[in-house]
Length: 579
Ligand code: AGP
Image (tube, protein in one colour):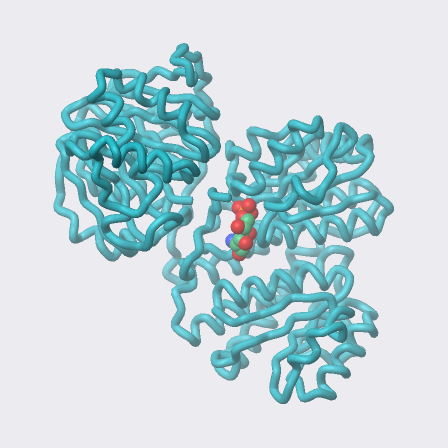
């Protein structure tokens, strides 16, 4: 995880300007941050940038690097915040990724007299470079030696005191150069500089670049120069706060009808050729294997459900176990689903699938992301930037792409009806959820059950309750409850149940838990069941969206009751770029 931003210009800039760019990467991690300049100034703090930026004095510089952290190695302390400084105080590094062999590297460096000030894996990089340079190597040579010796993942920016260059190198973790009017920016992704330029150069694995205010040069790991294409990126407008909403989460929940309409239009028009290619790949493949993590995995389960319902063989697996449990081969179409397009587990699974000869398609929100660039064909979900760590509108749009794919392959559904259904659900369910939230604020456990298409959404709602409301929640197949979990049901236990259409089996499960004292909150599109929440009559696929929205609202309003940090929940990051 972690976000990194560097900037190098002719005309000096205030270091607070780079913090503004860094803030746009806080979704990658937000436990601490820091900045270093080529004049040798280093400022670090734990906590959010907004809260602590005023502790950092204004300072003009022409070369600076900065970092926002999601702790992997070492607690959240000022010492562990980046940038890290070399022993002699002349080199400064920021790093996103994990240096897997940091322990032996650290040991060797300590034996050579280096003293470490942090518990991070990242600090070895700066000591290593300093060590090589003091042994007579050039900085280029030192970087190449590091890339050769390091195991693991890295996107790193290095500066040296009084040296008018930024040195940037990467493997697996993303890195992109932005071409500014007056110099260059280099960052984890284009959001960091998308307000200032549309010209970008993407780093590939095992490349490094030497950047001055006038020019840049890319090299491979052996030091051979590489010609790089300059991409003109489409404007990726960063989301802004809207005074009408207290949090990005509720803003993004309310953006769902508009985001859905925008996507449906695009899938039927400008993205129609890509959808056709996706369908052709799916039709010619022996089977479709989805791969994803977290919320995107829950969306992929809906994809499996919809494709299987029309006789197309499809499976899915959580990305971190894909290589262990899925047989990708030349006859397989692997469809990676990822909001960020940067989730490391998904990147690894895609690389694994490619190495086995599979075709790869992707469904992403962030254009030019690593997963999109690794894919044979990519569909964009056009949800707009999602700031809250919790996925809401992006889940809805992922499902719409999958429903469109199934529709093109024979599913009878009416996608155009869905944005209106979302609107109706929001205006009907929100007041009721607000009224119920106070009585749920002190609940410790919630069991969420559903069958068929309601099973994946039960898992998604449980995930929302965990990450945003900090309530232990289990999303499960209704049929599985009686095989063990029902032992936990006692007087007052909350069971949220999702019942689509004529699902009498889930109704029976409700009877079973009520008989044991559970308090059931039922959500259905069928008035026959007299549910607590009666949703609009669904079309194939739509219940997965409308019913989940009720769960999104519950997680938001319960968290609000509890006064939790909704957009940036503890221990999480929006983009999980470590294994
Ligand atoms: C869910 O609300 C989280 N944001 C998380 O589970 C997320 O879906 C997961 O980390 C995958 O992210 P991706 O879609 O960017 O790959």
